[in-house]
Length: 235
Length: 251
Ligand SMILES: Nc1ncnc2c1ncn2[C@@H]1O[C@H](COP(=O)(O)OP(=O)(O)OP(=O)(O)O)[C@@H](O)[C@H]1O
Ligand SMILES: [Mg+2]
Image (cartoon, rainbow over all chains, first blue to last red; front, side, top):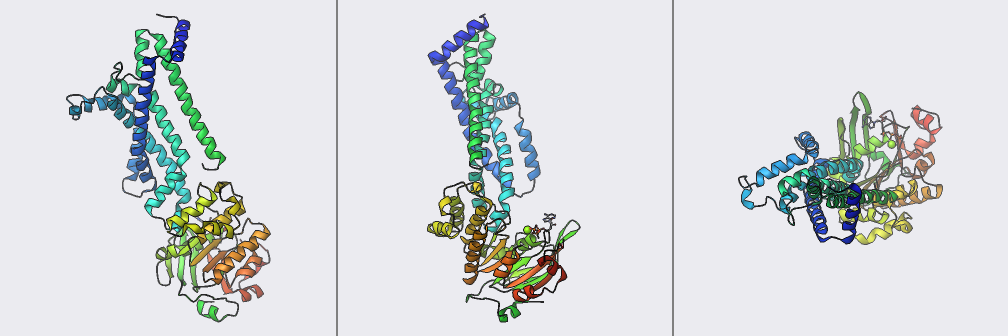
């Protein structure tokens, strides 16, 4: 067991030396969470747009479902994905369990509802403002959706960043479906959990520092997107 | 009641178009919100050309009347027909400049481009349209940073980009400086002289005198009077209209 001071010193040394193991973990984390964010946006944005401007039966039920899914606990998502991907599960034949793909699937399920619900709110507010003007211009449904997506671009970017922030910091789902296998599925959060319990505080702290910097970076990005949009009166 | 037939023979009417346009027939139109009749028993005939000015105190129902005419609001009762067709089927031949301009979160130029593209118009017209309303020098600015008057001018340019046969204007010069008011009036008058049917809401009595072929006075959701402009400004028949023009409150 190291003292906290020693561990911090070692941690900074690890970060600054660009330790290859450390780098591998960080890069895998970013790859998994960025991919999950992109897929979640590809699924969540159209759903959000559809619910925002659509008039259909059961719209309220969809709204409630979307908001409920936003609060899915990561471990539960991990468990459900595990049950599907395990060898005896319905998708077991794909052999995806304990691979980065499994982690991407879990994180996508976790954040797609967030992207859908938040973008629904953003697009619906904008549509309320534009609806009469767009109807007067006799725009098609497609033209309306395209215009809304483009005019909400800054807000939607912050929605995407929020999704990424949630994915990259999440541990419960990826540890169940990824298994924290060295050089294969070890990401920052799972490594921190494992190394801490093993007593290797230096590596845990080093990863913690990087994760913190990424979280701060995401927040800074959200802030600067907001400020850019506000400066041009685009929010 | 003043109608399209008598308007044609009135010396003050300036009908310039030779094309068969959209004439409006409204019969006993009512619009109810909860227990309030925002529009009540509105019957109106407008010819396919000319400039009709709608006046009336705040809350009289002028903006609602424009939206009902344009087809954005379906009335609770009565009928609205443009050359015999339902407003929704005539909407693409009309344009409405809203009282509060709704501008896209894009540059000034992109606001025009958007409409030209969506409506399949010649994209090369954008600079001319911006010149027309004196906004060429602001082309690359974010539209939402325009001043109130500039925003209204952009909204007018965007409406003209659709080549409307009917142009609804809801207080289009409410926040313009005097020179801009005259510039906008000239643009609207040019459109009218090209045969565009103009329906203009304004509180500016001077503007109404300059622009109107006929005047509709709306009061508490009802038509108080519909007269040729000359007759209306000589001596309004409706008492509320007289008070309104003389600056006495009639709300
Ligand atoms: N959606 C609505 N629900 C209830 N009442 C409404 C609604 N829209 C408008 N009204 C009411 O109808 C009345 C007429 O509104 P309208 O906007 O047509 O007035 P206006 O004549 O254009 O007034 P102004 O000169 O102030 O622009 C107002 O009293 C307004 O409060
Ligand atoms: Mg109004």
